[in-house]
Image (tube, rainbow, N blue to C red; front, side, top):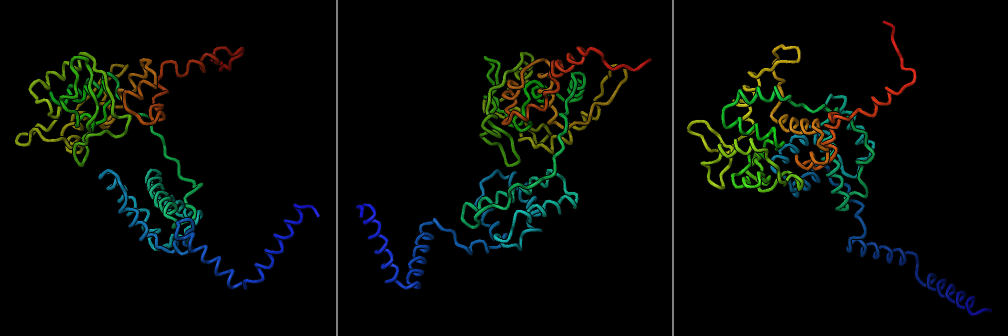
Length: 362
């Protein structure tokens, strides 16, 4: 007998005798102790963990969240209206992928908007991912779910004549604020959070650092790419200097002007009602036929879209516009791609080269 075969035979016989010397109950107990050890080390999930009610797990998840106050308010509303009414009484382990898909269909049948459905689903998916991370669930049921398509609206922007008409209807401080917005694309919160010392008059630049939110001035912008340096055209810098020459260095550039309440931090809603909407309502322009027309009833955020649209129409690359506006995603900037001067140049050129184009007799 070869040495290797002899050693294998001995090992097999020893193994058989070891098994015979321990009853099955003892072996099962040893296996159970091993499972307990794995569970203690965190390498084995408690099979009863999924029995926790959705509502209870939601409360634990919500209590551990780290988010901005305005984000929490919006999320709380979405959960209250669309998530908990359906899932509160379910046990976490009973929820399947098909149950989640059925819930989405129920929301669609109730004619809940696509954006609201997407937000509710994303929150539910986050709750389920946290349950997987904490070994409450082996896998999330929120996977491969079909969601209703969100209609993409074309960007709302003003023409040069329309923008000038709006500026003419605004009082001095707001005229400067909106002029700055048209030429920099700053978000409303960035305009309302701008401090005097963030304006570099020597280099004709401003730095976006603080942002005005519903919970106060934050010393950080919306995202990492929002913290940026923005160039200022000469006439915009001059308007800013006239507006800020009496301000203290650390003062907010734009504040309330109401008698008895002047100098306070601006509020988006309170600024729109008495300032923006009346100006837009009074503004008008002359179209290409010489007819006087009312300015489109667009919200203040359209100032930002207008800046992007004007630059793209002048041939500025989408990459540069993305960085100027502080867009986190390039896809956001691509919404203006159709405005590029040569956006359809190749297509039109190919149509012109057709040997026998289609015609309709006069």
